[in-house]
Image (cartoon, rainbow, N blue to C red; front, side, top):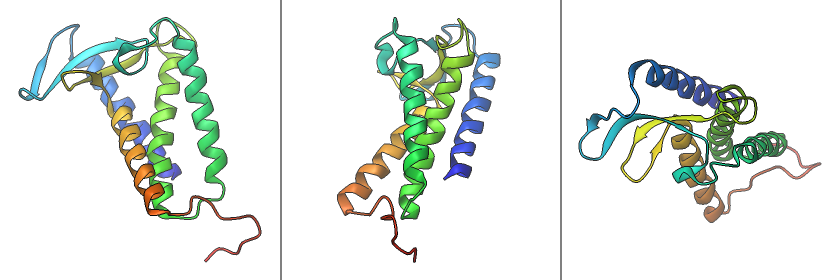
Length: 155
C-alpha cells in the first residue's frame, strides 16, 4: 500500500513538474482529440473549481484523509483493500502537498491540473483517487473484509 502511494505521489508530482514547465497559460494541446487535451490550470478549489475561497478546508480534508487511511491500514485484510487505499493515500498525499507548499502560500496552495477531459481538468492524483474509489466500491459490494478483527490470527 505504501509503495503504491509513493508511486502515485512521485508520478503525480513529476507530471505536474512537466506540465508547469511545458505548458503555457491557457494553451490547449490535443492528446486524443476531441476527448483529451493538456491545459495548465492552478485550481484553488475542489473538483469543478468548487470552493475556491476555502482552499484551507481542502488542506484539512486531505490531511484528515491521510490520517484516516493510515489508521485503517494498520490491519488491512486483503490485497484489494491495500490497492484501493494505496491509490487513495497517494492521491490525498499529493493534493495535501500541493495545498501546503504551492503558491499562494501555506495551506492555501493551488493544485496543478493539466489533463483536460472537457467538463473538467485534473491530474494523475485525481485519476488515482477515482480508481481507488471504484476499487473501494467494488470491494464493498463483494463484501471483502477491510480489516482483521483484533485478536484474529492472520492467514
